[in-house]
Image (cartoon, rainbow, N blue to C red; front, side, top):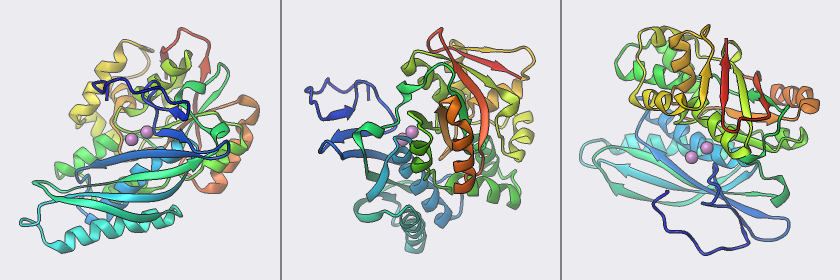
Length: 320
Ligand code: CO
Ligand code: CO
């Protein structure tokens, strides 16, 4: 995206390429702004229906991470029509459609092409009140960091691709990835201004974006971060995907790991995630309300993993 030419300034662009966030936001009226995002990828699990669910949950997540409510979506499909039976595509689309329906939104169109490898995702349009946008740049010193899903998705899905994972492990990571992050109302009620969703850059990569954009430092307690049980085993075996290793290299410059944080755990904190949870910076006075709200909404985790502190901007300290 950084190769794009600078766009013409438009006062209605509330979130755009100047301060890239989980989605772009365009003001329609004083009360309503459009939230727009697109995301698609190649299969991450073998079950086509589950892949459709995961791809949709992941695409919808960027709307939630901006504090928005998804309204409608367009399918984006690449499919090897001569290599795979049409039933597979049908199952992918059914998974996506069911997940969009669960989100209270509707699929109103899409586009497909013949492709070497299956790809699926959605362009999602949502709405948000212009005063209730959750950005990466709004964390304040004293805010408490909360995470709503376990990490370790990259290392476990890589174990699946290598034929190492058990049925139970596959089901567990699939359930994590297809879960909707549909809790913007809980975040608004708790006065949250800053949230992002954890995806390809891993927990520390996305946390670093928050630290940089908010011009604050973060302190994260590795032992408080929820991790998929199977991920520890595969982390010990170093089954990490290439993306996770790249993440580790990228965050090294801005992260200070305590000596007491062992190597597999450092890599887990950098592990690339598909359709991960929300990382929320919550004003400390509202923390109990946020946690109760998340619990009532049934998020997989409501983990307090650290807090925000004043400078140095963009820096992360990781303690055991
Ligand atoms: Co995002
Ligand atoms: Co995205």
